[in-house]
Length: 182
Image 1 (cartoon, rainbow, N blue to C red):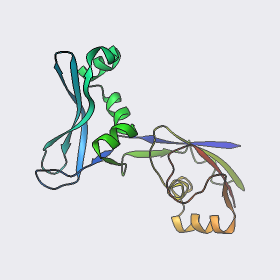
Image 2 (cartoon, one colour):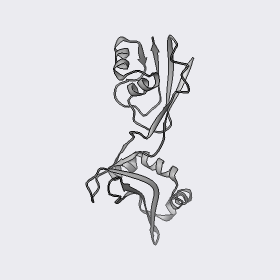
Image 3 (cartoon, rainbow, N blue to C red):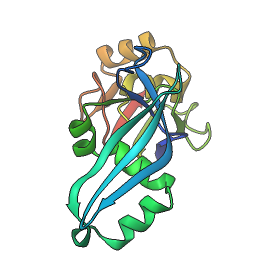
């Protein structure tokens, strides 16, 4: 029987960027946007607050774009300070690259295993789905899902009792599956 695990965000990740006021490196996006129009051109920024001093930084979303080229739905979401849009933009690689920021997902996600009926079986086939592009080490997910230490999971991989079509070292953000033989 195939078990499905889901890696889901619990809150917005921390934005990693250096603060000009206090030299901290962490900002918390709160879902607020600033939109500025100058004649036919529009700018939009996602606002984030320094976790240490509270200083605001602006992450560029739109820059000097013609108002007519922006979808009306996007403009409405910007004006409404849509938290869902904040999550989408933080995960957008173009926005992150343009603003030279990275994300820290520590403490911002959870693993839903759907119960513990897989713990007592001889072999377990598991499919892991990601609800968002959260970079997580598969070894950590497997250890958390089965209640094992990471060293035990590494040992199972080395012995060939834990197999997958994808490499289990490093970080993954895409769905994958694995089989654990006891």
